[in-house]
View 1: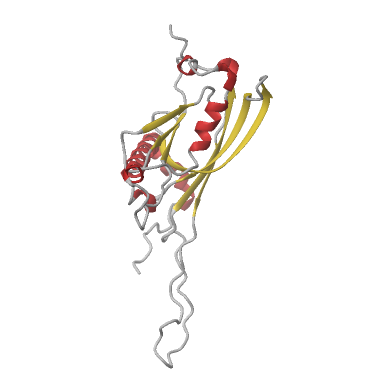
View 2: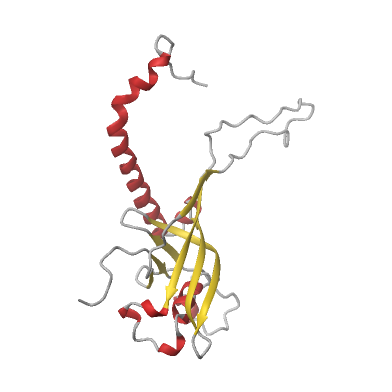
Length: 235
C-alpha cells in the first residue's frame, strides 16, 4: 500500500495558455463536505428604442423580451479546502518540513496570476509590443461527471497554526468560483471540451430521471382534463 486514499478526490487542474500538455494538478487532501452552488439566468438585453429612427417617427417603447429569450445561464459556487501538514499525502512528502503547507497554499494562489507563455520566453524584451500575459485555464474536477472550467474570483485564506519558522501547518481556504461560458469557449479549446462534456453528462442524468417519471404525467395533469392543451400560437 502506498498510503494514497482509495476514494476519488476533487482537484484543480491548471492548463497553461497555448498548451494542452503543461498541466498543474492540485488534488484535495480532504474532499469538502459541501459545495454551495448558485445557478441563474442573466436578463436578456432589451432591444428596440428610438435611436436611429427616421425623423418624425413616433417613439416606440422597447419590445418586451420573452422570459426565456437570450440570457446566458450563469453559475457560481464555492468550496472550502482544508490543509493539514499532519495529513500531507506521500506524493508531497519530499518537500522540506520547514515550509509546512506553504507550498500547497502558494500553488492555489498561483491559479489567480497570469503565467509566462512560450511567446514571452522567446522574447528578448526589446519588442515594441509585448504579448499580453494570460491566466491559466482552471478546471474544477468534482467526480467523473463534473469537470468544469472556472474563473477563481477570490480566495479567503485562514491560517490557524504555525511551525517554529512561522510557516503555516494548518489552514482553510474558501474558494469562490465562476463557471466560464461561451465567450471563453470560443477562444479556448480546453474550455469548450470541458463545457461540452459536463453539459452532456448533465443531460444524460436528467434523461435517466425523466425516463422513470414520464409515465406519471397523466396523474399530475388530471386537473386539466377537458381543457385545451395546445401549443402557443406562432408569432
